[in-house]
Amino acid sequence: MDETKYFDQGGVLVTNSRFVVGAKSYPMAGVTSVRESLVPPKRLAEVIFGVLTLLALLVQAWVPATLFGIVTVFCLVLRKPQHRVSLCSPDGDAPALSSADSAFAAAVVDALNRALLARTSEPSEA
Image (cartoon, rainbow, N blue to C red; front, side, top):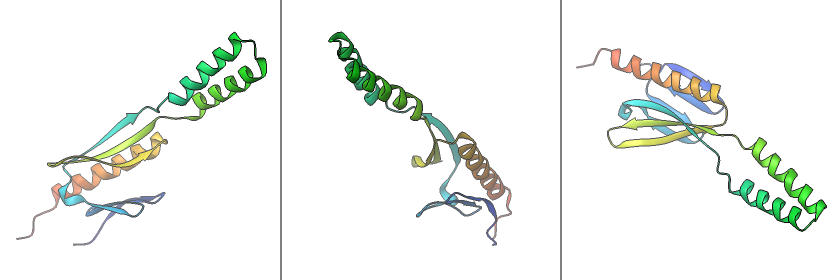
């Protein structure tokens, strides 16, 4: 059986028989479905710097308050949610890919679904 490519971009390869992310390879034979989920970023750093900003403002330490405020805003703006692609099998879900780019994650999910559909529609060899 020939291997058909459905996606090959950014270190990710999807074929009818395997899913490769970097150096990790997943056989498509055990995959029953694919799921994409949104994982929000952890906001502990923003909370800490926000509290430090408020404390610096209370004691009228303007320079540290300004610096802590800038760091807080940068952390809030720069940290993006991650789009996680999970492979579902009878054994459970396995997170296989995480990306901040929603279009990239959606393209991978689409390619995986096409590979699954092609696998189920192939005639079985006896």
